[in-house]
Length: 224
Image (cartoon, rainbow, N blue to C red; front, side, top):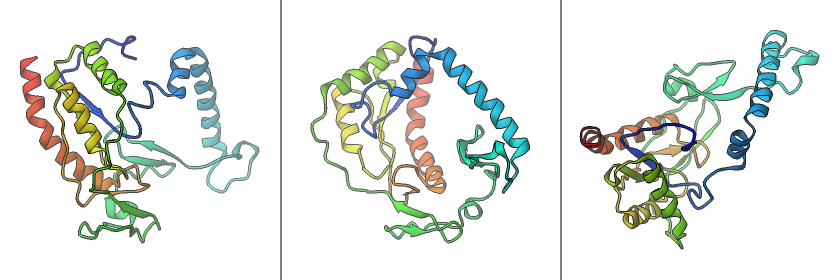
C-alpha cells in the first residue's frame, strides 16, 4: 500500500498489539486483495448484486430461496467509527439505550449489560512481560517512517487497551528507535470481547489519548 499510494503524513501513530509487527507485514487476506485486484472486484460486485436482491426478497423471517444464510452483519459508521448492525442502523442512539448498560468504572470486574446480555470485561492494568522482542519489529517500524519521510519525533508508538497490556513492549520499541511513546490512564475501561473496547470506553480512551497527542500534532504540523 505504501508503494502504490502517494502519502504525505505529518504524523504516524503505530499501535503495537495482537502480535504486530512480529506477526509480519501483511495478512494473507491483505496479500490476496493486492495481488488479485480484478478477482476481488468481481467477487465484491457479485456479492453486492446478491445483497441487493436479498434486501428486496428477504425481510425479517421471510422464507425464500434467496434468503438462505441471511444474517445480520456488523459495519462501522463512516461518521464516527461506531459499530452498527444491518438492518437496524441505530448507531446514533445513546450508549445506554444501545447496549442496555453503563458500566461502573469503580468495579474492576466483568459486568453484565442487562439490556443485551453481553458481558463487559475490564482492561488489565498490569503490564505484560515484554519477553524476547524480535529485532525485526523495530526494523519494520523504522521502514514505515523512512518510506513516508516522517521525522522521528513525529512517529508515535502506542498500545491501545486490550486484554493483554502491551505498554511495556511498545515502550521498549519506542526507546530502541528513539521515537515518542504515548500511553494513557487505562482505569475504568472495558472491552466487549477482550479485544474491542466498549463504545463508552472507546470514547473515553480517545479523549485521553488525543489530549496527550495534541501537542505533538501541533509541533509536527508547524515544523515539518
